[in-house]
Image (cartoon, rainbow, N blue to C red; front, top):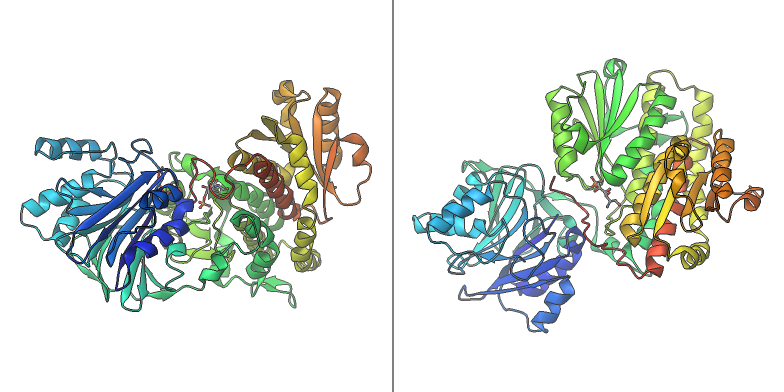
Amino acid sequence: MCGIIGYAGARQAAPIILEGLAALEYRGYDSAGIAVLDADGIPAVHKKSGKLVNLAAALQGSLPEGVTGVGHTRWATHGAPTDFNAHPHTDCDNQIIVVHNGIVENYVQIKEDLISQGHEFTSQTDAECIPHMIESYIEQEYSFEEAVRASAREIKGANAVVAISTRDPGKLVAFRLGNAGGLVVGYGQDELFLASDLPALLPHTQEVAYLAGGEMVTLDNHSANYFTLDGMSVTKTPMHVAYDALSAAKGEYKHFMLKEIHEQPEAIINSLRGRVSFNDLKVVLDEFQISDADIARIDRVVFLGMGTSFNAAMVARNWMESLARLPSEFDNSSEFRYRDPVIDENTLVVSLSQSGETADTLAAMEKAQENGALQLTLCNYPGTQTTRIADHTMLLRAGLEIGVASSKTFTNSLISLYLLAIDIGTRRGVLEESRRRDMFAELARLPDLLGQALADESQYEVLAQKFGRRSDFLYLGRGINFPLAMEGALKLKELSYIHAEGYPAAEMKHGPISLIDDEMPVVALMPRDDLYEKMLSNVNEVKARGGTVIAVATEGNEDIKKRVDEVIYVPEVSSLINPVLMAVPMQLLAYHIALWRGCDIDQPRNLAKSVTVE
Ligand code: AGP
């Protein structure tokens, strides 16, 4: 959840660290800090509550000098977002400096032991026990590196830590425990970097190596050496990542999220490239090459995810049932991990996580692994933790997504899941060629149709002016569009801080209907499909009780204008692929309402892009 960066090289560290923190701020933004060692190893530590701009203002343009340093942007777990609780944290003598991401589950015991040894703490964080532990080992004549290793072995929980020491200026020592909280080493020319995530590294290098759970690394300006926590050497070859710094720039757009919403047609083309063979009407998933015997033995599919990824999982169940005729279900990873699910080697578990770091999804995948399931994961970044657990990985190919609220990773998840269902349905012999022909023709048109759905943004500005002051929204959908109602409500909540609920439309009569009045807009997802008439009945029920309805309907449906208060049109497509187009109005309505309300769109309050704690 927090963002970590470290630098060892020949250039001034502070500007590189601040720039890296800006790129990582989407991971957490309730406080930020930086520590740099000068040529004599004397540390300068600056930290400030609030966003990174507060830290920059506190530095007043006078950056600490030195070529080694660390930085941190925080998403609070233990201790309020204050200056004292901000990272970096130091030991009693300000000789050991640490930045940390995760939760030290046994910190109460560790802290009590250290206090009884005479250590003095200045914050309420769990993180502060780490520099003091390292200090206490150094007092017992351990080297800096050995002291970090010994501390790492004592800590429980999923954690990522980077430490520097005034006794060893020029060196960074880092470790990672458990699956959550990524750490990536970046290899530059006479300089090395460490960061929680790629966006901080990409302006400097595309050669990277990921630290796995239970590994540590020591690095200086020319080399990185990897070890297990037992001190065994680990060999790693840096890999080349294809994303470049330019793709992370906002360009003409006011927000990264708006840019990412508009990138969806291109992102979808990328996700189709090489996977759809229009000639022989087949999906070819190089990443999911399993034998016909393996396909035949799958008797059930379970989709797992959290938040937006969970909403995509809900859509996927419809596709897997309809196109592959396989019994399918979905679950929140956080619920699945604590159940006693019936999973065996004939179950295909498909997990979704754009970040590849979501703690609950990782734990759910481990549970599926224990039960012998075949696992496929969908993720936007190669080499992340989910990809290490799964048997197969399908990359989302959405490009960097900086906005904390997911947009293009959602639509690319949908497309990937759609292709998966077509592939399995074809290989099981239940998806006829004639049906595939129509589906493929539609897939070819989809990027263009998405472009059309994105064309008229002014209608959302008008709706934002009309409804931006409201405090509650209800989103209704049926069948394959019910998950999109959930996604619409989630987007509105996280971007605009307006309370919103997504409901299966028929469920409204069983409770939420008592909320209907002229104050709460109802967004009705009602494309022309088999359930249109049913949706119309639900809309009539809302109107009969004085409610206000914003319908999302199929282009050309003029009749709907007479029945509701506002209409957003989406191009006509088959009912199965409708959710992909429906995503656009869900995103743009929430975006423009949030913009009208003056909200922080790319970094909504309290959220983080990667949720690496439970
Ligand atoms: C999306 O808009 C949310 N910020 C959030 O619900 C997110 O989808 C969820 O945390 C799961 O993330 P993941 O896809 O990286 O696992």
